Image: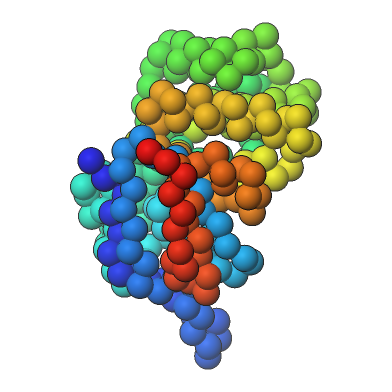
Length: 228
């Protein structure tokens, strides 16, 4: 089953009197459980594609079906519901809330989805333990290393059992040792059957993926398949 099915997707931005084409006629299909890397130079359309896949933005034209549902023309409220229930995000800058501890940061998506306090606390604890932070539950982001903060972000991304996880340069702010640990966590998620789509400039990180999509000037320039 295809988690992502995109047909002739285009995104154009109006900058004053100038129209900027960020994506043009992109066709893409991603099956459930696949590990995908998206690469390309600055301005190639990587972030735009990730924003569209994550329902953070709508295409100018074309169709995007997520798990079979056409989300191309949904309004902001509908897109927000889709994001909350089906998509997990991992950002380069972690995007944790400094005033909240590990458990509270992980619980946040579940709060917006109406989980009971007991259910969200139980699941947050399980996820924190899964990413190796079972002994850091009451620590705030400022008390954690960069790698630990990114582990919290990964646990938070998993809170609502999303159909896919989108990661934007997830090791970009980490040293090599912490980055390797995060990649190991992502590999483990893939082995559990999660669909991963990672934007990266690092060829070594991309080599871990099953499929590498290269963008150039808003188009898919080429694809590389690394195996089944």
